Image 1 (cartoon, helix red, strand yellow):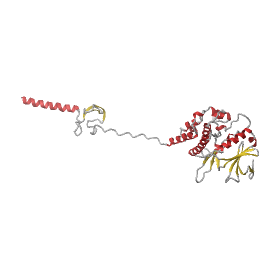
Image 2: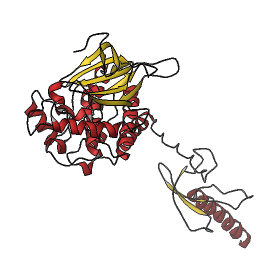
Image 3: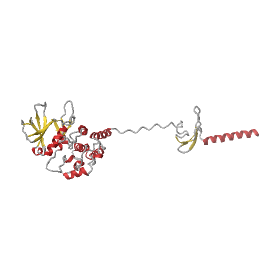
Image 4: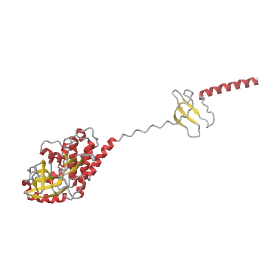
Amino acid sequence: MLDRGAVFAGYRIETTLGRGGTGAVYLARHPAMPGPVALKLLDPAVSADPEIRARFREETEIVARLHHPGIVEVYDSGVDDGCLWLAMQYVDGRDATVISPRSLPANRVIALIDATAAALDYAHRAGVLHRDVKPANILLARPTRSRRETALLTDFGVGRLPQDADGPGTILATLAYAAPEQLRGQPLDPRADQYSLACTLFRMLTGVLPHAATNPSAMIKGHLRDLPLPITGLRPDLPAALDTVLARALAKHPAHRYPSCSDFLLAIHETFTTAARPEPRAAPCPPPPPSACADPPGTGCSETLSAYEPPGSGRFVAEAPSVVQAVEVSQPGHRRSMVPDRARLGYLAIATAAVLIVVIGLLN
């Protein structure tokens, strides 16, 4: 433990930023650098392990070549007084463990994870895996007048160092966020980081992990065998399709996950876009076709046509409430005959009788 004002590897200690199982992080300044740095020191017991020392040097050299706005930059590293150390970009802010469903709306949480996904994809293209993605390794830079709160991913490589370097079988990751293949000791690819990112997003949106567990054995079983909890059961305000997206990113087999972290986040954005899109309204029904009968109701012509004879016949068969009538339709420009057939037959009988009476009178 270094006190304020102490000098280590040329860096003057200003304050302690935090301490974990493998070492401590200090705010420090170097005469050759314009601003403060985060100086991480690993404990002597950890630094003494030859395997850890070799891996530390190899990985810090790789991470020092990563230059991305979403990744904490590594400036320098070395070994002094038996301790491995790393000088990194200082981020004035907090880590993502402080985020809860009540502290930040879902769209802001997703924006922060979006930046982390882009950083991971950049590292993956450079051939670097993180292997320990979790809220504690996502630093949130304080907002300023020119920018909102931003996320930076830290502890590439260094995050893989074991909490207990005392023998084989140690999992080089945080158990709560480890991918199934990581727990099995199988070869890893970028989709292992995607799994951990999905666990991280779940935790930031709900305050709990996707596999309910109270001990390490239950946690391992959850990662290896159990289905994740549906997030909408904990957050009914989130889109229902989010359950499907997270289930894919948390698939037990890497081949069943998304091709990249950005593809995973793209699917999340689509669920929110679809949920916000208003449902299409049904198209209005077209107006009914003009009735073949232009006369007012009650004049002997039904308004609902049930069938018609072939074109040119000039006849429609119409259904009226009480009788079925044949209605003649005249050609355009002519008056239509709307007299019912029975009335017409009555008129014809009367006319025929009158003619017969006249003829008989003449004959007499």
